[in-house]
Length: 207
Image (tube, rainbow, N blue to C red):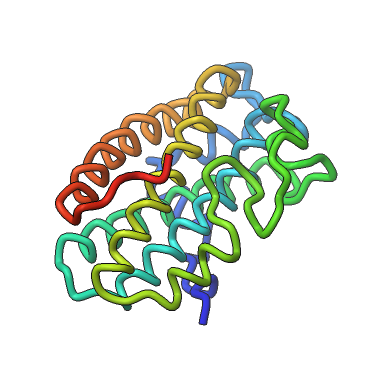
């Protein structure tokens, strides 16, 4: 079974707890942090990265069920908790801004990349695993599951870094810009870690 149902709910509560009360300022429409429009970079990033993060959380729960390796299980737990929390914050911002969580435009349009990802087999955005790859992870066990998870998550993080860098360049709401910059730094660090873990298992990244 897929683990989409394990995604953390209560986005607004997570936002207020995790963002140090920034939610009130973001919703106020002040001159310092005006409420962004529905098709702004801020809204586009929040919507698309929430979907991107959801798959990362799902992959992390899948591999934790398929290996007893404590290093992999710890990494997967950290990724799941971090990205579920961030996802809640981004969905919470959309609620506070009273903006739709679904856009009529294609994914990545806010980065002028709409239509550049085919969306074939479930891969809607850069780095996302296909439905076939997710099915392979569901069937794998032990070392095979560890390697596949590390390979897929490395690609997933590369795509996430690209998207977060796009927000750093375009997003004018300070708290979201800072969240994006934090994603860039933390996911780049985890990419280096996962490449090393792959090497320990006699494997290499996909790309």
